[in-house]
Length: 382
Ligand SMILES: *Cc1c(COP(=O)(O)O)cnc(C)c1O
Image (tube, rainbow, N blue to C red):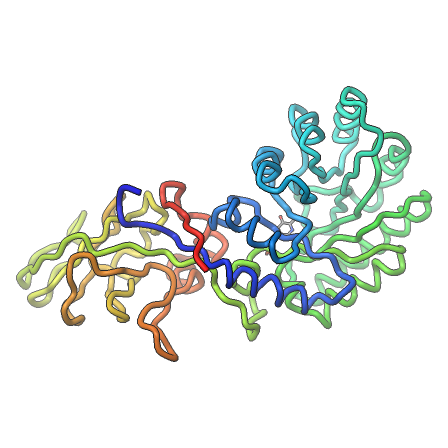
């Protein structure tokens, strides 16, 4: 490690969030832990191992490349490549025992060819139904041509869909109705999937709503429900689903590397967007937008130093940020600085969440977490 910038990921908090989601989704539901995009920026290896140690058996990644990386870490896990296949990936997917999501004839053809080449006779796939996301998935009205193909090497293990507005009960009910229609066609074709897979964090956090309905739908199809939480695993509740004891697993930290006092009237940073109104003490942080600290936090965001908030003064630069510590007694070179996380201890420590940063920068916590750059080392802690 060459400079004092790192993200610490708590195994205990990940495990706690996983257990909470388990309890909320009920005994019969299978949970697929979504670890795409480097586990939402938390580091794939550490998170996948921590979740597997807690009993997670199913993992969701975006693409085959992410799946191959996860296969090296967890040789026994079930791994679903959720964003489908590109034709050059079919063979690698099967070689590494990944489970692809499919929805078009070419997907099935590529997989059949790869299966024959590798001598595989039982390849499980998850069939996505487009119930309103209009992103990927087969239209429920046009399923028969696909269902005919599950006779040979390919086995329909799960029928899945994705909810576009999980906080909107009416919209989700309509998507659920279309999923039910698709499941009737699956049954009529004589196919019996093991799972009906739907619902992200938002649905997993509404146990008496969507998860229960999904359970009923799955039961009628002779299958088990599968939920696919991502964000909630990392300790954030999406949309309105708050009130649960989710614990943010990631803390993003740096240190004060230099300090200076400037006179009233002195400018700070590019374009001189901050001008000291009084004699001001500035602390320099070795972190900037190239680390994923959003430039929109310039003159708006703050960080924690000595358990207190220090406002960002001036523009966030590519590799540097300056904060105003005039109000904070005794700040020294080497002091720990928290960009995301808690500081100060006690019953009510100061905290900055990805949700707060998302509000200030006009985005969502998912993006704030994924934006933490690869050059920030991830460290697992207890
Ligand atoms: C990302 C993703 C999820 C997880 O969504 P969260 O809102 O982070 O819980 C579930 N299913 C699919 C298909 C996804 O792409």
